[in-house]
Amino acid sequence: MITPDPLLSEHAPAIEKALARAAAAISPEDFRGLIGDPGQTTLRMVMESLSADSISVWIADLDEENLIVTHSEPDPAFIGWHQPLSEGLTSLVYASEQPLCENQVYLNAKHSKRVDEAMKQVTAALIATPFYFGGKVQGVISCVQLKPSLDAPDPCGFTARGLNRVRRLSTVLERLVNYRLLTRILNLEI
Image (cartoon, rainbow, N blue to C red; front, side, top):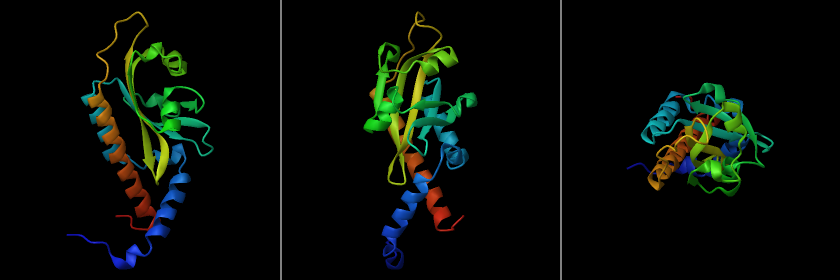
């Protein structure tokens, strides 16, 4: 059984503060390398298991004015897209720290149509969950099902089971990012 090392345990508060500082200093551009191939593979696997058309990781910019897409499967052209934190359901999830699973999203007045207009498609279903690292919410993971137009039939939609998968994904990515930050802070590049 692994037990805490007393010499290291006495430094736990300082390490936690250093982790929080490092996390707060990570820009969306810096974030791209933190999850690496293991994180990207996990994102793809969850997307496929949900029959989603796309999965994205949105990170708040350093001024907390916008959410910026740092990872997007399968469309890397979406990386760098930003949305003001004052609009849309993804921003609502960030601000409230409450996950969301909604079908017929296009009927919700709070849904931002900016992405739909830019991509020339309609978001039919959405799962969005807060994404934490460094001890606080830093962004959102979103999964969507799309349709080509408003009059096209809706896809199968998402369920509470799918929401739970995305929540677990968020926890796995949080642990991966915290691990990567800690190895850098402690100069333990393994």
